[in-house]
Amino acid sequence: MISQVVAGAALALGLLNGCSASTSPAAPAVALAPAPRVTGDRQIVHVLNRLTYGPRPGDLERVRTMGVSAWIDRQLRPQTIDDSATERALAELTTLRMPIAEALREFPRPDPKLQAQVASGEMSRQEMLERYPLEKRPARIATELQAAKAVRAVTSERQLEEIMVDLWFNHFNVFAGKGDVRWYVSAYEREAIRPYAMGRFPDLVRATAHHPAMLFYLDNWLSARPDFIVPAGPNRGRRAGLNENYARELMELHTLGVDGGYTQRDVTEVARAFTGWTIDRPQTDGRFVFRPGMHDTGEKIVLGRRIPAGGGRDDGERVIEILTRHPATARFIATKLARRFVADTPPPALVTKVADTYTSTDGDIPAMLRTIFESPEFYSADAYGAKIKKPFEFVASAVRALGGTTDAQGGMALARASAEIGEPLYQAQPPTGYADRGEVWVNAGALLARMNFALGLASGRYPHVSVEIPALVAGAEPSAPAAVLNRLLTAIVADQAGPETRAVLAAQLGEPQITRMSPDDRGPANTDVAKLAALVIGSPEFQRR
Image (tube, rainbow, N blue to C red; front, side):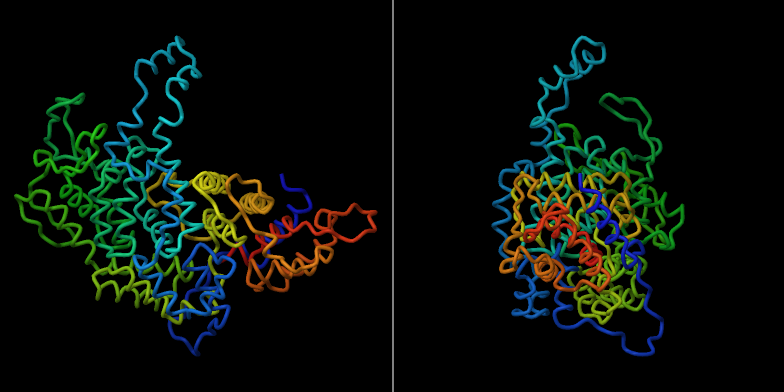
């Protein structure tokens, strides 16, 4: 546990400069003068903080040499970036490549007879666990996916693509702990999110709509015309009915937005269009199938658009086309992207520009991102440091800032750290996923948890995670804590710490824990670089991006 002195400093730093107030004001409708822009190295730091999981040692110099525009253009074309080293690091995570059917075979459900024996007391829980070892449980699928996410965030050269995979997974969230999603979740990210994260938004909607993970999570696989009778299986003879869960979230969260102009009647009509979109043998094959017998073939009216009677699977496809081409969807997605990359309250003028790009390019994601990255709003002084890192962003950025590396086992440790700070990966239960607004993540307990992680990381307490702190302070005299601090501020926050932060940190330099001296020691100081680095990571300048 972090010491009382360091904890006090952590809270002072975390709450400094309004870290608990995360939103930045919206841009005025009419600008009276050009807004101040960040330039030079501050601009590079800003770009690295927004388009990556945080700068690594040497990144600022690399972008300075290449040029900001050229570096951004490369990130917008991830297929041109060699990322084979990261893929090699993930090779041991075998579930990442498993088709759903194979995952269902490799990680079988517990034998109901054994469960009954445990329930009756004939078998102890420990005996049950020995019959059903950890490496054969479906929880391993999510655990390996979490590890892969951490490894990619820390090591991948395709940083913008990883940011977008995270954004879209939360946008089209499924909860890895719900029923059969345990077996489907890795395939969902691999098949429905990652291939389209830097493609076209309508393709993302279509891929998620067809995927068994989404069909199961939002119950559409059970949705049928009102008079449908289940013909076989354990529920044979039972009357099924319409389920509106997916239809509602498709409009409210995936496309139009809560104020997108649809009605409850539209929800029902969309649900009717998706009847029969289900899962073939969910516990053995787990693949999408359209069952005509479950489908409501009647006429449907969606947002005033008529879908004629007699249709089948194409009814759902037509709904996706209607929704993804709607102006409300263009604005909703533009707002989401501007919120992620600019400010919690996005500038309205920028949202309009990005929405126009969505419309003119049929939802091309790199084109919308380019509109943001070339906008004055993105480079405005108000946008600089206006976003607070989510827990996972904080964990990954801290490892990167300290020159860290990790393997698959270390990725599991970092995923656990993210969970301890408040963001267990792939475990958001509501369909909204994890929020991208600062107020959700900032409180005294969370800030202290972040500080504890920073101290553990800097002290080398996370297995299979290596950091290179000595390289960050090379040349600084260990007996001069102020010199060590200056070197750390340059390396970790690009020398962007404000006077208040510097004052709080400087006040810690006389503490025995930092100088490794007892109160009556008279010898030279021997700076505890790890504790000092942890305090810099706890600063508001590092907590923000």
